[in-house]
Amino acid sequence: MISNRRHIVALSGGKDSTAMALALAEKEPREYTYVCTPTGNEMPELEAHWSKLESILNAPIIRLEGLGLMALIAQQGMIPNHAARWCTRIIKLERDYKWLAEQGPCISYVGLRADEDSRAGMVFRDEGSVIMDFPMQRWGWGLPEVQGFLEERGVSI
Image (cartoon, rainbow, N blue to C red):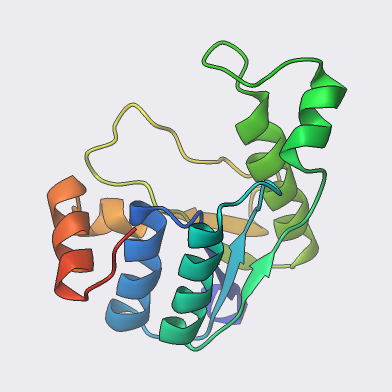
């Protein structure tokens, strides 16, 4: 049953996930849990952005910690690149999958836009316990809508 599920919002700190989180709070208000997957090499500006979002959303952003980027580069023996995208899989997807599986029934909101046909969202392996939702696709939001929404609210990335 959907009403018993936790509502979890994935945040990278980029324009899409930021717009999605803020729009969800406005368009579909409910209690959300916000999570991000730091690399361990975040610039101070990103940390400041996450802090600002915590203030705007009036909620903490849970940081799903794990091995940092430099440790993973040493472990993998290479720098991630277009041909070896292990960074996204290990730092973001695997951490998120593991954490979501521990949350019990939940809905995970992911910031893929309606104009990103070539990008696929996560498919959670344990069907039923985690429902993946792509609100910006439901709303028909492309890049212009995301940029306009953030501009109207004075949020810069």
